[in-house]
Image (cartoon, rainbow, N blue to C red; front, side, top):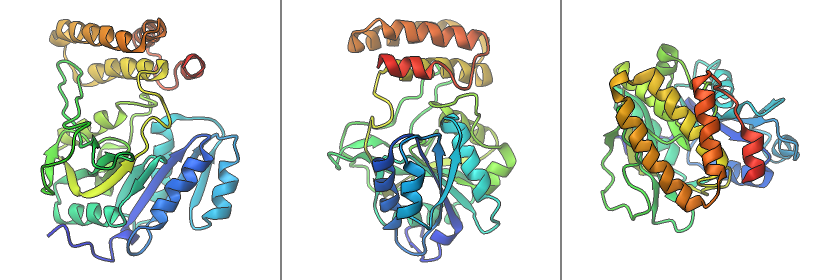
Amino acid sequence: MYANTSMKQGSRVGIVMLTWNQKKMTLEGLDALRRLDGPKPRIVLVDNGSVDGTCEAVRAAFPEVEVLGLPVNEGFCAANNRGAELLLKDPVVEYVLFVNNDIDLEPDCVNLLAAFMDATPSAGACGPLIFYNEPRDIVWAAGGRIFTDLMWFPPILRDRPWRCGNTPRRIDYIHGCALMVRRSVIEKIGMFDERFFIYHDEVDWCHRMARAGWDVWLVPAARLYHKVSQVVGQHSPMMIYYTSRNKMLFWWKHGSLSDIPKFYAFHLWKLVRIFARAGSPWALISLFKALLDAMTGGFGRGHIEAARKKN
C-alpha cells in the first residue's frame, strides 16, 4: 500500500527550492522541510540572483542545504533545471521534488509521495493536495485538466473544502508549487522547457510526460500548504503577460490550426473578465506585449521588470 511511509524514502528524494529576494519566506520554507519525517532528503536551494542576503542567511541557518546562487534571475524553469541537474549527479536520487519557497507541509508529505511512486511504476509524476496556508481546510490546488483546443488548464478543485477522501487520482497536470518527478522521466523527455520562464511550464511538462506514456497523479493523503501570492500578485501585469504568452507557446507545441477560432474567442472572453477585475489598462498592455513577443519568438525572460513596476 502506498501509504506505508517507510523511513527509507527521504534519502532517495532530492528537493529543489527556488528563491528570489525572499529571505524570510525562504527560511520558513526550509524550516518546514527540516521537520520532515525520516531520513532527510537532499535539498538544493537555487537563488535567482537575490540581493537581500538570502544565500548568506541560508548557509548560516541551514548548513545541510546546498545553495546554488545564480548571477541573475533566470526564471522558474531554468533555475529548477539547474537544481535538478545538480541533484541527478547523485545516482542515489530516484525522485526530484520541485517546491516553492512559500510553503508549509505535513511531516509525512514527501514520504507519502515517494512511496506512491514506488508502488506505481507507470507514474511519471505526482503531487500533494495543496491547501491555502490560511485557512487550512480550503483547497488551493488539486491538479488540473488540459484542453489543448482552448489552451485552457482549469484546476480540478479550488477554493472549496476537500471531501473526496485520500484515494489517488489520475489527472492531467500537477501544479509546479509541489511536483515530484521520476528520474527516468527526466532522462527520457528532459526537464522544464526554459522558453516558458514562468507559468504553464508544469502543464507543458506533464503533457509531454503523458505523450511519452507516463501517468500523472494527485496523492491527496500528502498535504501541503501554500502562502499564495507571495511571489506574484493574482491578475498582476506580470502574471497576465506570462500566462498569455505561454498559452501561445503551448499551442504552437501541442495545438492545431483548427483550434485557432475557439482559442481566440475563448481567451478574448477571459481577458474581458480579467480587465473587469483588475480595473487597469495595464491588463491590456500586458496582453499586447505577450502576443507581440509570442508572434516574434520572444520567449524566455520577458517584460518582467516593467510589469513588476506597474503592479
